[in-house]
Amino acid sequence: TPITSMRLRVEMLPEGEDRDRLLDSLQEMQHLAEATLDFIRGSTTEQHRRYDLATLLESLCDDLREMGLAVDYAESPRCVLQGQPEAVKRALRNLIENAVKYGQRAEVKLEASEKESIITITDQGPGIPAEERDRVFQPFYRLEQSRSRDTGGAGLGLAIARTLIRGMGGVIQLDNGPEGRGLRVSV
Image (cartoon, rainbow, N blue to C red; front, side, top):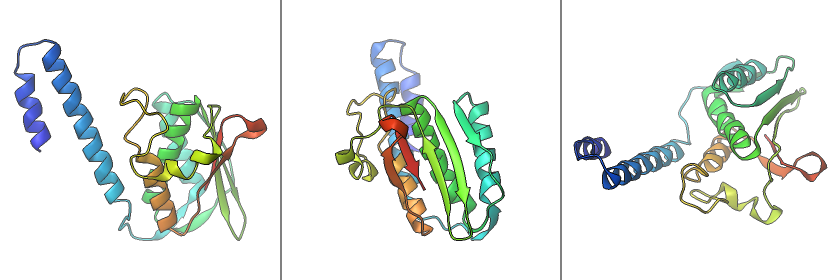
């Protein structure tokens, strides 16, 4: 890609502050380009098939724990659905990673009945003010306004998650966590 070509050229420059800044800028450009492509691909073409949502969630949470993220999953009974499991996994991964990043820990729970399945992801962070809850789903909108990659992403995670969830007929909602602390995401 053009970014890779530029990175190779910059890496051949003498070490120094300018070289490091250029490499950081290229890294940011690549991240933004990848996030934009992910958002565009949000309308997945994955084939529908049967899958167990409880098994998918448990596996995802196990993977994230192995990566060192603080994720708790409350075991639940089987919940077999017809749908797009990779799209579901991608959306839930965004939501769980956000919970850990902004709220220190994610508590994930699945409740299922014959009529609906509800996944809740609760964190211990500062939450999102009620007046901002619709805006955070807009592409490239970030509550954290600095340009630092350490404190925020490109502002596409929630937009991608909502696009995928809505594309499968689901609903995503943001509320205060228990006792008004943290954030609770319901899917």
